[in-house]
Image 1 (cartoon, rainbow, N blue to C red):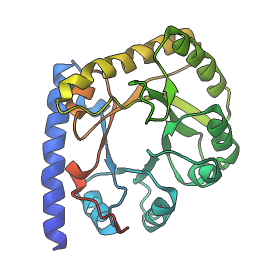
Image 2 (image 1 turned 180 degrees about the vertical axis):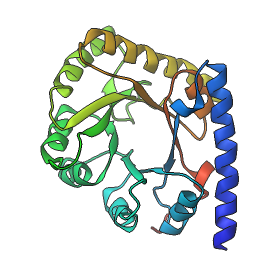
Image 3 (image 1 turned 90 degrees about the horizontal axis):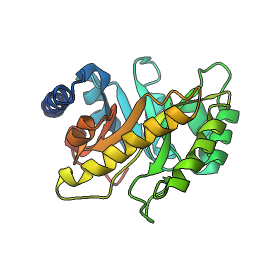
Length: 244
């Protein structure tokens, strides 16, 4: 059974990497610039171990309490990286700051200050993505991007973030509305890239070199429009176990 699981995940990973390579070539980029993040929420340790044996090193979790035992389980493997991709409650900021490599869901200055304050001194600054609401949907968190005024306000936010000592702002994260046709996501990914360039040009010292964008449904289009990290869940690891 264990071998079957690894074979299935390896097949999925090979297919995903092939799509990544093709999309990168079409956009004049190198596939090595793009990271496949395996969203491992609601996945048992056995599945994550199988993915690790296939060469998958970067995993994304959404819930702190679910993630911490997994992180502990893999503590002896220094090449495994854990990213937080879900919403972070203020009271969980310390645990996130202590245990994760990257946060993709930074949606307030207050959270950034907490993460910086609680990041242990023996660890490098916490890599963070500024979460922006590129579809301006009421159901999603993240900084609004609907108007030019919103964009101007984000300049102030970025200036504040790059001054925090234990935070390393690396880029933007955004999720378009859910479409049946992934091509309909393209304008939103283009908007994310344009906003990233706008902010990098407007704020001296801001190194917004990464874009966290694209999921199982639309990651090929996201890569074509500049994404550097794609978040793949069930398409890579298989169905989730919601009893976890």
